[in-house]
Length: 356
Image 1 (cartoon, rainbow, N blue to C red):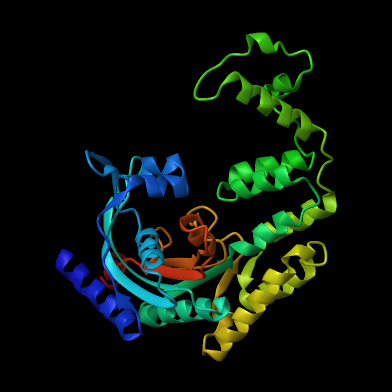
Image 2 (image 1 turned 30 degrees about the vertical axis):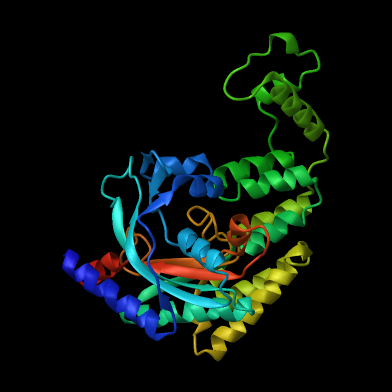
């Protein structure tokens, strides 16, 4: 089976090379510090790490995007297209049937001046190479939700907190309900906010000192005085989170909601341009699903257009392919310059499973 997977991976990479991409390799061992700084300490629970006396903590490659983007930055390249093929490694502590090592083939397009055309180019290539396998395509745009949050009539602190929890839908919903006055403050937070709280006996634990705790209490008190998010905004945001359907119908629905959430209009215009470009490139937009919330639980470094390809008759099978835009990640790696970047990856083992 491994021989067949490698052969399929070679076929996919050759397709991307023939489409103008440069084949590149990255080290299997990557500096752990880089990934921890980007994704936080949580990534340690999903990766394999080891220590090196000279190089420090190392991590078995969890993805290709970060090392390829770092390579692009280090070489100072302009617009470039890359393709790769190799193993990625993920720890599995809950689902033993999921592989902890699998082959991945991908395509990355960095620094193309027109982001809409770059999105369409990448999606078109993946659609073409996956067309023989009768897959369902799903798209979305993380920018719609982030724009809606930034447009709320509330404090910067509350917006920042909501943005930080976009990737955790349950926590996001709890915060939204609290900020809108739907739920009351928790008993623990009530105790912290109490004016007569005895600060002299407040317990200290973990990495936070007493000043950190007292500063947090002050922030909570200030936040408790902020007016609730209006029901008009909340209702519109609730509707926004539920939007899904074929692209033309989604655009109609977003047009209606944009009257209550005008902040999404620029992203809606971008969606219209992308849709027009899809049509111009021979892509049937009436066959593509669009979900406003697509990508919220497993695509943490994407910040714009996202897509995935799924087996129609295998709902329990992971996506055969995923991808999207990650402009914000380029700034995290190099604060001197923002780059435009979009790409995706395919799992050849899942293709073979579908064929068999």
